Length: 425
Image (cartoon, rainbow, N blue to C red; front, side):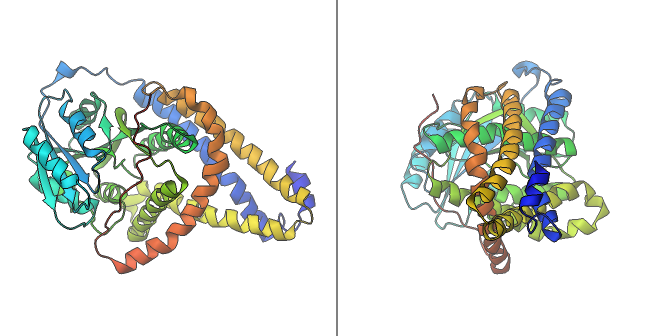
């Protein structure tokens, strides 16, 4: 089949072009196999050997739950009531209003008066999530912090699973990232994201954890050791994605970061293309800002365990531009519509097939904690839509990341798209 394509398109599949077209095809194919192998190995060596959670097994320490807020009047009260109702015995909840322009300030003030465990901090200027988290850390009383987004609902066992790591993982454990799950499942876009979070993101984190380094903790739910954050200078207030940035700072200082798939956190996701576009461009920009800032790790032998994750980020960016180049070149070199369709059909079928196998394996694994396998039908839409969207997202983020690194200053946030704010059935 491949030979037939070469005959039809000598300009595209010969000489220097063959390297680019081969890269465009083989990179996602090999990475899918890599994530599958990593997920299965993590399941065999880590998840299947875990001890059952026994809440009575230890004297659980005090935790401080930090909830940064910006224009969250529709969601923050539900989140706080969920956190207050958790069975975890010793906790405080710190709400940080980062200059919201809606009624968030009044809601969190009322909640702080209603619950003795809740404290409200009012910041009058929007200076970003990282800055809000730093203020919350300074106000916290505990050595262990759990950071939760203001639209999230924690499973009752999530704090136990997160905190247990700090007593079984040694003194160099700096952070434990939880497992985000989708609450709103109302339309095609939200259901595709459900599949993505349950499979793609979970598979990547499982594999990266086996390698010893994790690209990023999940900002929606993550537990930190305060001493580790202080050691690395806290969060970077000039980085648009504080979770990615702090993950790299911790690991560069040789603090361990772990993934806990049983620490479930229910969250809302965008349900419009514009909402997804803004969210993903922000994520991509944050990742690119990090690799631009930390490029010196490639020249440090001590940081060699981070090289693979670092280079994978650059290769992903290169793949996006290579895919666009090959696509445009094909449009200009193919003589007929049939020839164009032949390339897209053969390559897309192979990549979609391997992607669906990866999605199925990951969904089966995640179904141990979250009933998601029934949504496998929606996985068919993921390669067809998300690959193309994410490719253009990466391209759009590149100039923003470069501009941000040159400009500096506080990385402020905007009101996110919270979907239709409906709970999953």
